[in-house]
Image 1 (cartoon, rainbow, N blue to C red):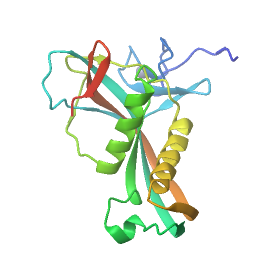
Image 2 (cartoon, protein in one colour; image 1 turned 45 degrees about the vertical axis):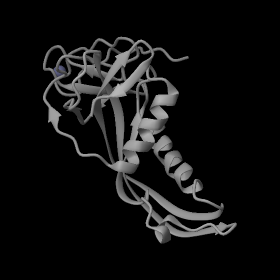
Image 3 (cartoon, helix red, strand yellow; image 1 turned 90 degrees about the vertical axis):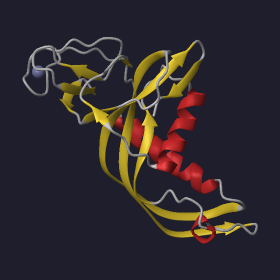
Image 4 (cartoon, rainbow, N blue to C red; image 1 turned 90 degrees about the horizontal axis):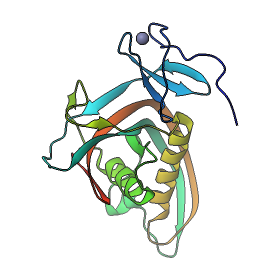
Length: 197
Ligand SMILES: [Zn+2]
């Protein structure tokens, strides 16, 4: 249990910040800039808001994702049981320079977050961004950056382990080049979430 003793300050203008609902993204009422809250401190954070491309009547939420840009280098792999590497079969690779998408809102049920993370990371979509949270709410971001980096590496390992056969050996480097926050539009119905991209 830790208690924040020092008042939080905007990382841009040093005005006091109010935190609410465990949100790690704190918007300054004074200058409008956004700070990331972690380890009792605030720091500048890069973020963008993605334009919804799907029109729905249901309630719109902007869901925070950590986008972890990485260079994944596999030096050596060994597969038993007649398994064939994706590099040989021409299937989509989760290697090289790419973005890993990690849903950072614990309000999103695990079963949705897991599927979104995998699909977005495999497909590497391109987005149009908008300057503000239009017609929807900003969902609380609960996940810190280090957890997101660990989850990104876990997604890579899970994908590598899914090839037919047994992965006996995987010698790799997982280099994180940068991180940012991306808010993706999603529509919420009674017990369902649908990405609006
Ligand atoms: Zn400020």
